[in-house]
Image 1 (cartoon, rainbow, N blue to C red):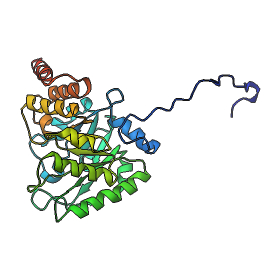
Image 2: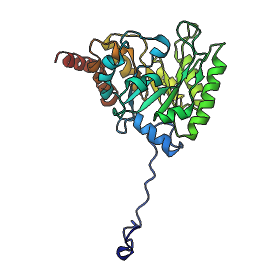
Image 3: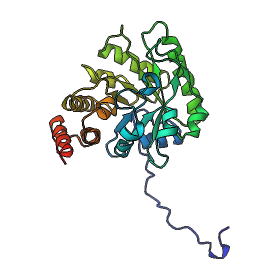
Image 4: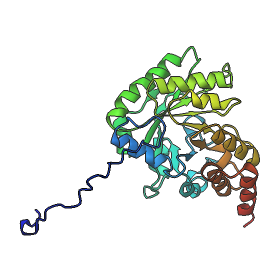
Length: 291
């Protein structure tokens, strides 16, 4: 208890100074709970408003794919240079140091692999994500897939209900099947459906007319890196996406399969947060690689 003998009357009331009511800096998050906003601030850099996420959740459907054979050897050295880490709970528990102090975007659906029909998945219990201190939960939406569209949309819809009670943002990931067009019309449709059903952020692919996709989506969009490109091509894709309004990138293979993954991640971060050009980023990559 405070000492009542030293109880002083307040005097710094700031009369005449309006209370600051600043809009929250993450797109579409102004009306979220305090806890959800707090988690969003861990993911998105306050100064730039963007995020460089390092994705290494590929193994949950692909096994020990190239670059992810040993997470401790290939990915752990990259972790300090990412804003957010995206992985499965098995890798989080076994291979991500608990003192890394990076926000976790937790892959939260599973059930199929590349050997079977993808996206016939169930969703992790939200309390398990709370136990692992996840900053966001990520699940796939398979828009346009006759077999799994309804189930994956229902998964997101339900997860948004439950995760919202715990203040955990949900990321909707737009799947691209073999029969789906990789264009702004499809990605715009899929991204908007994610947001309409409760996703607080969306991961989708960059494409021509990407500004239309971003403009029609009321929550932040981060782009997937996709298949391995040359370093300059990958940096160019990041640059174009950011200029078209993306809130960041969630890259995996274009980082951990690079000839110099740390240099590549630093170059990507400079493009995303500092606005350097792809050529400047490539020069940065080469300079860091030659040291």
